[in-house]
Length: 333
Image 1 (tube, rainbow, N blue to C red):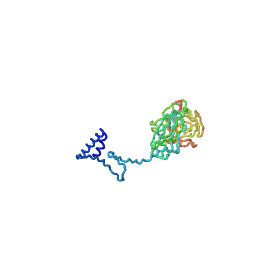
Image 2: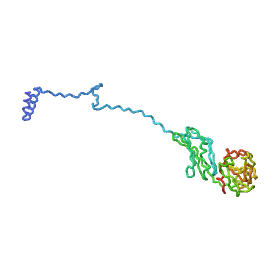
Image 3: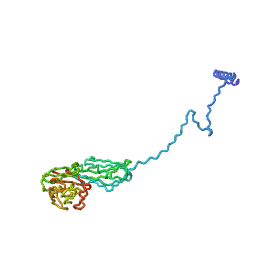
Image 4: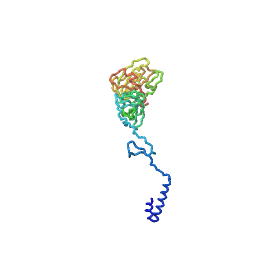
């Protein structure tokens, strides 16, 4: 210590100041002043050895994020609805007031959910729209036949369309056919005759049904004329039960499944197989068969195309040859 004092004392005032500080420190140490020991904060030792980084004590361990396995995306349903048609009927040309029978079967490659049939006019407007549940691979078009009334269409051009949809939202147009409803200009059958009992259900004379019109007001023997061009397919007396006989009957086929019936005639002026023109005389007014006074009972029926079998009683089958209102066809009403 003394040696250090001698070395410092040689530096003038500055040395003296340093010497004073050293002496004070030496006295403090020799007087037993407690020493302050500073310890380094103990760090955890990694079992793997030295120099491994240790996370700060304040940092909370973060859970390991594990990516969840993702399912492979399912492909969207493909537009694979395939619909086939079997023996499907559709109109081509009909007359005002004429009905048409829909037939046929639709078959799909998987279950159909809904079938929609519509009649679209020339302006693109649905005049008829019928929807039916299918829930099957097959659908019979006769299920919608009773709800589509072609007979109520006015003259013009139309499109008959059938759409099919499935549970995947796929849609197919199974049928799309254009057809025409022709305006009727057929002749009144009796000059001077007036309309009597009309086309209706509810009269007592005909068992509650009168599926034709009566023309009366003229005398026995007055000429009856064909209402349109055609072929005579039946011309003879119709034998039947007393209250259902048409008497002397003429039936003319006009094509497209349309037949006209002229009943209770007094005389027949044609024979089966004759070609007749509109306005040509085919019979005369009478009261044969189940008739109450002189009159013409006129019917129009829609049935199968003429098969070539003349004078057949099949023409009297009302389920095969169905009546419709003649007043939609006739001029001079």
